[in-house]
Image: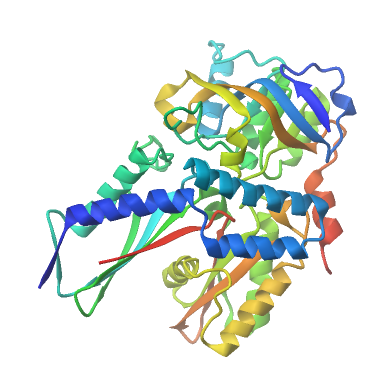
Length: 281
Length: 182
């Protein structure tokens, strides 16, 4: 049985959260740069340049890319032959979140009771944590700082099997169109298809962890991702919703088997400040 | 390119047109969801307000904490639509400008026309870049709200675009239609 001191997890989570909030991932930077060459709207081009300049300033001055430093979403793969020393895994992750948001001068954006009191918890906890048990003794933590603006514009729909691929494309385009400027396009779009209602939602969130230029290993799904991206970019929403060619940088799909009667589709939108990191012990 | 200084006078706002690039200088105030609720409550109960509303410009932002040596952290706009229910009454009480991102409701667009106000957009997700135009920041009310507290900001040539002018035009409708491929 392998042991990991919870202090190591706390420090690694804190450090990673500061890093992803300050340094825009190179895959996003590259996608923004290549979209700049294709953007036809002069205003859109100007906005893409501002977004890139913003990322340079953020990295240089160690300022968060965006003031919405997000809700922390974590997917963990924990080996069965692993024991966390000192506190349980969720406690350790949350302690890392609190440390990172304090030491990194990141904004604390979580409120306790969502309905009545809505009091800021003061340390950006709790994180949204999903844990999978796997064989072995490794600990893998995928961590995201997810902005509220894009999360608010995400949607889920239980389609009919008869709606098929075209129904899926139409729904995704509808979500992006309705969202318009609110989720801060250019977007990264995570799509979860299949499973049940909650499984589709989880898959759509997980799909956001892929870089925008990553294509599915299944060739049919890879073509579908390309097709959806092309349709979304015909909408004209453009950078910050002010019109243009660059509405999304990438579409990633994750699927799961589902009931004969079902076709659940979840569309999770991410703003251009897509912040994800990976920790492994 | 238009240069404007706050507080905004009613006269001259009719000249601003949707799509105009504007540099704002002077004092602006931050308020987002929770602060709006409290300001509206204070108006209803005739209690003191955190800042004089007449001619003021409200920036929808919850900045990150200021790191050592800086007046403020990252400070870009949040989604304006969430403040729609509160906006007509603020316009009625004399607020002249709002800075945010995203579309406004028809009610807000009508109120901007009726009371003579401008809705500006700043670049969403460019909080580090925009922070360079903020020279001072001070919490003046509702400190318990943390990032949602009302800040008084002194800004210098803060870059915004006119999204909704007082003539009823909308930057999003025009822009998206122009680049849509049917």
